[in-house]
Amino acid sequence: MRVEECAAPSVPGPGPIVDIAGLPESAACAALVRGLVARGALAEADLPAGAEPPSGDGVPYPQDGPAITNLGPPEPGFLGREDLLRRLRAALVRGDAHDDVRVAVVWGLGGVGKTSVAVNFAHRFRRHYEIVWWLTAERSADLRTGLLRLAAELGVPEQADADRMINELWRALCGRGRWLLIYDNAGAEPVRHWPAGGGGHVLVTSRRSDWAGPADPERRFEVRPMAAGAAVRLLCERTGDDDVRSAQAIADALGRLPLALAHAAAYSRQAALPLREYLRLLDGSLEQVLSRFRPDDHVQPVAMTWNLSLARAGEDVPETLDLMRLWSMLAPVRIPRGLLRGPADGARGRLAAITGDPLSYDLAVQRLARYSLIGVDAEHVQVHRLVQTVVRLDMEPADAAEWLEAAAILLERRFPQAADDSARWTTARGGRTARGCWRTSWPSRATTAG
Image 1: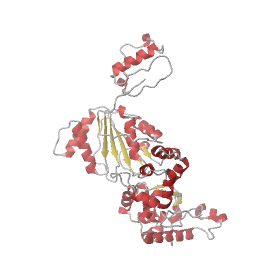
Image 2: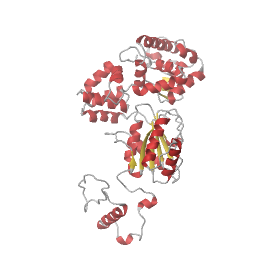
Image 3: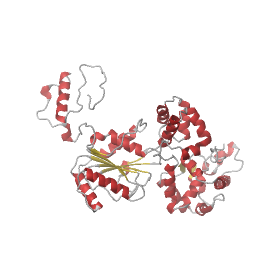
Image 4: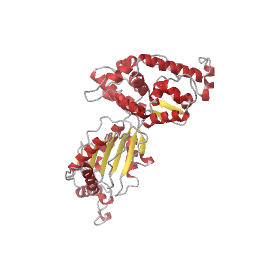
């Protein structure tokens, strides 16, 4: 059965494809019944008289898309997130009530692909919505502007009081069919403007793991780096280069972050550079590539993605930045949380004040986790290798050298003597291995000891 305009493939079987593209629902139902009867799959005598079409039971009829939308084009070559899209859809429709607003949140590190997930979700399920509207939600002023534009599209009378006009928008939405609002990049500010009801869906993207909006825990989804296979496929397809080995090495170096991979593919394509040559460039100039290359005039370098989050994380708790500076000198492995608990001679500046104060230390860790700059569990901290690179890039060489020395002193205090004796690695504090826990070069691309 063909439901939209596309080239009809040749398929085996008795009879042609049932074509309902462009037909209204009643005509489409009749065409489908005729096709089933012609194939002997259904007898006309079995059809109930005056049967209600599927939309009467809440099953949306396939259409060309929402009647009202400001959605941009889908991301070409969207890969590796199909399961997440299905889980998002299931979460939004589970227990759906006509007068309720269902909210789902996708959160994660900057550059991990949250906005891409939201865009492709909206396109994948666009036929289920009469309205799809994209809203920039980082600042209240931008959110208000987007909502006022939607109000105008819906014919809400213009008013001098913007808040009153938005309240009228909520009432107008209650009288429409199913709708989807996307609040992109919701930040630290509380969301002031929120739909009051009407049975719609809201999809929120945020870097904040603790985004405080009205979403149940089962409707919050962390977006993680791409799977290795999908990352390699993205690089090869977007560059036209089938050098899988180089693509895999580039994906590993960039931590499989979609934004960094997309920039890598753009660089390789624009410079007519094979993937193996781009890999050599990364080996010697990772920091420069992250901080200088822009795919076009409207797109910032990759490093800019994390600079704002780092600044926000350090606004109220300045010690968080010192903590990140120290962690940037450690290898991108799981770092024991206890490494900095208790007095530490290797700690510098503000960090020295919190290493002996478990509460202050935990608050700094929580602050970084809140902005999705680190992954954390009861025993370990994980810092993404590109975030580490950006932190080091922001330091003067002399300051970086001091932090590298502080990391070395700290590890010397925490781990046993004769660290080059592999037989003693498992006797390190907490039973962790000392191997690969610190870096030995600056400012070129750092390498791990051991």
